[in-house]
Length: 515
Image 1 (cartoon, rainbow, N blue to C red):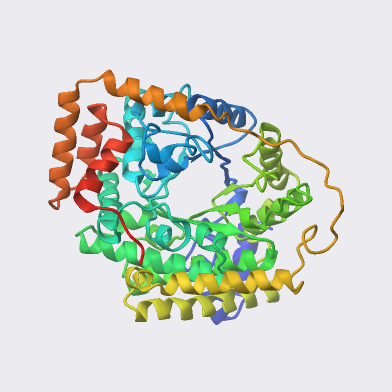
Image 2 (cartoon, rainbow, N blue to C red):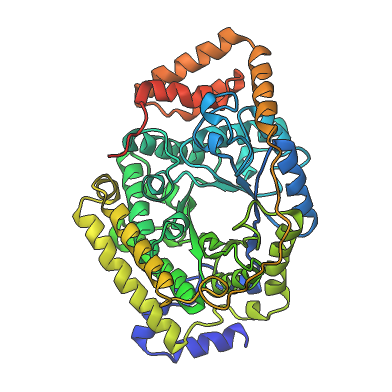
C-alpha cells in the first residue's frame, strides 16, 4: 500500500476514530511519532553493557558494534551510581560487579577508546550523579575533537523513580531536582542533540507495578520535571523536545503494545493541552524499551530466549525508538559474550526476517488492541489524577503513596504465582527435576582492589591545590542559584574524582534519609 492509498483509507474512517488515532507522525501520535516509522529507519539496537573495568567494557562495546549493534548503552556499578570512588570503604565488594566502574575522566577515556563519540549515540543509565557522568563524557568527546553540538545520546537523569523503585539516590528530592533542571538548561545551550532525561517507567514496572501504573507514575514524574524546569525559567519548547522516556516490555504482547500507544497519546495531550507546548516535537513521546528483567527465570533459563523475543515483538508493535533485549542468563548473572550476541541477533531477526517492519502500525486498528489502548489510557489517567490531588509526583512520593501502590501490586502478582493463578513456565508449572547448567559470567573479585589502587594513583598525580579550589568553588555555587554544570566540568578538568565531586555536594545538601 502506498502513501496515497493509506491517506484514502484514513479519511474513510469515522471522525472520532481519526481524532483518537491520528495519522502516524501526527498529533496525538497514537500510531507512532514518525510518519513512516520503520519503513524509513529501524529502531536503534542498543544493547546494555557494563562490567568490571572500563577497558573490559570497551572490549564488549566493540564486540557488539562489530556485530551490528547501532547504539551504546552503559551500565554502571553501584558505587558509581551512588557517587562513590572505588577506594571508598562503602564500595568494598561492589566495584565493577553490576556495571562498569567509572571514577575519573581517565576511566571515561578508556571506556570509549577507539569509539568516535560524534558518530555513535550513547545512553547512560545514571541518575543521582547524572550531571557528573555527562560532564566526563563531554570532556572525553572534546578531547577527541568532537563538536558538542553534534554529540548525541541520552542520560537517564530521572531521580524521582529512584525514591520509589530503585534506591540509588544520594541527595534529598529538592536539590536532586535542581541537578536535573541544571542539566536541562546547560544541554539546551551547549549539547542540543542530547536527550537530557530518560523518564523511566522501566524500574517502576520491575519493582512490581502494573502496565497502567507504569504509564501513570512515569507521566506523573514527567509532569513534575516539566514544572520544575518552568519554575526555573526555562522556555517550554526549548527543553521539551529533548525529554525522552524508558519503558519495560513484559510478556502480554497486546497489553504492552497498547501501553506504548496509550502513553504516546496521553503525553501528547498533556504537553499540548495542559502545558501549552507549541512545537509538535514537544508533544512527541519518544522512548527506549528494555525487555523485562523481572520476567526472566533462573529455572530453565533457555525459556528466557522465547520470552525476550515476544517482549521485543511487543515493543516494536508499540513503536519503540530503541530497544535492548535481555540475555537469557541474566537471572543467573551478567550476560556472557555468547548470550549477549544471541540477544542482539533476536532484534536483528525481528527487524530483517519477521516482516513486522513492513507496516507503519502493524497491529493498529485491531478491535482488541484499540480497546486495550483506551482502557489503559482511562486507568492511567485516573491514577495520575490521584497523584495530582496529592500535590504532584514529588509530594505523592514524599507521602509514600506511589511506593504503596507499587508494593501492593507486586504483592498481588506474587500471590497469583504462588496460587498458580498466573502460570510461569518452568517455575510453577512444567518444571523439571534436573536443570541443564548454562555458563555464567564471573567478575574477577580482585577488580575492586585494582580499581582502588588506580584511583589512589590518580589522586597523587595532580595539582592538589587546583583540585581543592575547583571543589571549593563547586560547594559555594551549590549554596547559590547558579547552574552547577560549569563547576562540575571545572572540577573534572582539575582532576577531581566522581566521589569528590559528589561528596562536595553531600557536604552542602546532606543525604536523603527515607521515612
